[in-house]
Image 1: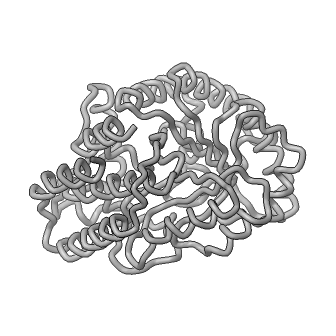
Image 2: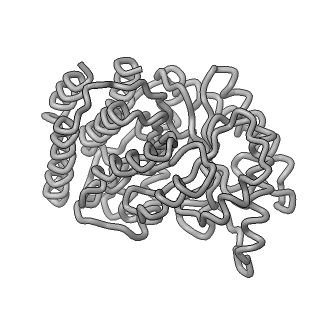
Length: 371
């Protein structure tokens, strides 16, 4: 039943896709990769369909927004966004609280703490799960408004402060999940976990599917993590098949699996570096002709999660649940910042007006049919 729903709906919307000439080859290649992975999933099906908790990125609470959470209307934006996600049937939200934001020596610390405590209260008020990605702020990049400098930071100071930060997050916010980072050092993981009063919070760490699988084996075998985390972006080069490999390693050591970031990466050649920081790639996401492939990607993740008993999945670019921009050669050359500003403005209007894109509607149906 799951497979029939996913495929029939995707086939319907794909007939409407009209990629511009310069993107047609990439579009076709990415679709071929998704189609191939669906064949792989069917060939490896074990028959059982596990339940999954559906999440989504709560982007207005992302720490890379710099001082935005300190603005007077910040919580209002979070609440409206959270309401819209809740209306989609989403059962949890993912929030990035990056180092060193949640430390007393940071300017505005008390205000940040109050903001995230309020966010946690709003999430729990709606009966939703809370997943915190406690990585590192993308300071000095186009993806962050933060100008924090890491000059002179030693590994010893980093792991000591990171332990204090994660301890405070667990004690203050009581999230359901904390992802300690992508490809962190095993020594750091054990140092942070030592003596940590987790309460009901599950602790995890992991990699992007394009990363080094040796980290997964080390996390599973040599730490007391509760779960292995993965991020899914590039799909070319057997990276989707790596989901199964990561799950198998986790199962071997009785670890749960969480997939708390994923979106279709618009590159049709294998890539293993600079994935999280490629503005030239991420700016392609804003265009509406990608919607059918974004939907097929989401459907594929859901099917993989249900077959592999992945506990929680959370798409990242939830902006596109509320708005895309129609492609035009006159704007195709614009920068990531310029295109993002355009789509964010449109999304904000649609969030207030309670309007969804076809991708938002599709995710709502995925949640409804597969919860």
